[in-house]
Image 1 (cartoon, rainbow, N blue to C red):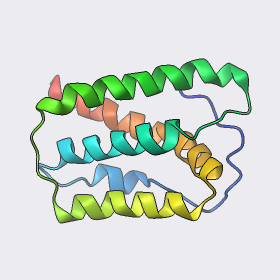
Image 2: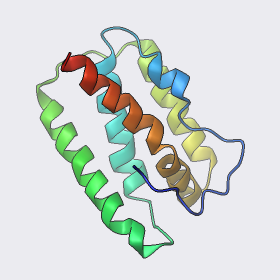
Image 3: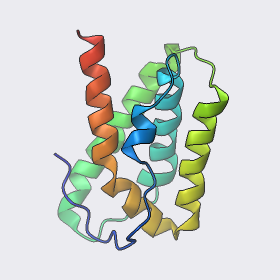
Image 4: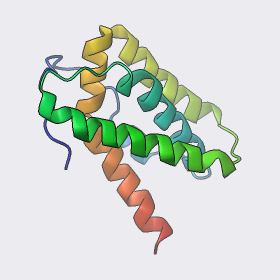
Length: 127
């Protein structure tokens, strides 16, 4: 379980609504996942500076896991649809509206949504 993120003081802003992530169009899962991992690796983990040192080990481990998943996805040849790109673009837009540290804190605070979605994907592929 991801610990509650201290420092997420931006109320009323949601970067990644669970309905958006759960409504990924058929055939776009691979593309959406690739773009979402890219966002977290390049924007979030690179800018996340925890105010609590005890959170650094799990955030580093999670960043490394995302990098491994992204590396394994190089075999995934998918074409991103317009709707998928719009969804990720809106994520970037909301992230950029915040100060970089606030955006990173917010995105880390919403990791539960991402991890639940990934768990659901894993269950579908193993069923």
